[in-house]
Length: 334
Ligand code: DAH
Image 1 (cartoon, rainbow, N blue to C red):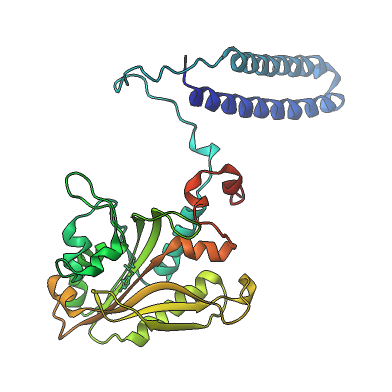
Image 2 (cartoon, helix red, strand yellow; image 1 turned 180 degrees about the vertical axis):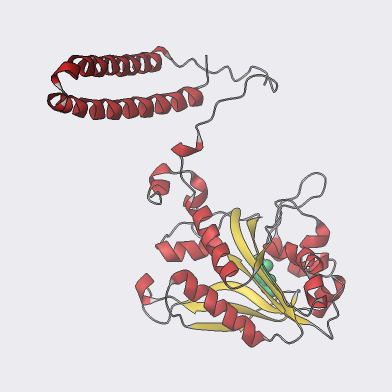
């Protein structure tokens, strides 16, 4: 006897099969109206064929409905050992689902950065101490490490607390661009994890996007231009922006980047929202990746995608994203 989820999947499957067959039947019924236009000598044959088809469809509908009724749900034996080599559950085909709203927005974010000439590198879901802290100029035992209270596996791996864990890899992988006289311009979207007390604005699992730019001549002004462009494209309108001082061991100077909540999105004027952290890449971070910090300079930024999406759609509780609440998800299906 299949598990409940399989039966449920099957029922949905049968329901849509029946719906498709009924639609077919409706089309066929319309064909009957054409009998009068068929030449008299062929009329009988034409009618017979239609009847034949109609019977076949009706039989299929009856069979499908009977098959759905025959499945009764048997209680699962949760004490039974898992047979890993046994038959795996049948999942619904992808046509029954739709993209999670966060994933659609994730794609939108990627598309904007691509349109601005950025390469894309997705971040990892499991990383290590070196990429999480050391390569980002966090001194051993420095209290700044506490700001990134994340999880660890028994083997010592770290589900990354931010997409900045990818900075070192990006710098090393794209260093060749500098040798070719070009700039490094890479955006890194990814899923991140934090040991948070979960509430309306904090989740243990969320999404971020990092940006890394390095060239011989780039300035903080260029970074602000890029960020303004990104946010204006994402929200489809002109925005007021400002920065305030921040602290990150991997940037010097470090800034927080804010936008004024637009009126169209419920802003009353003067509501400043912190969207991300950013700054000029610390010379030690460049050096560790083998890039000469005297010749080259860069800037980087990183911010939450969930927060971006919440503002766009006026959502007030970040927990909905991970909640699998169908009522919520259905509002985003098209
Ligand atoms: N990774 C930081 C965080 O999650 C945000 C950040 C700050 C990213 C400064 C950067 C940066 O790339 O330069 O809090």
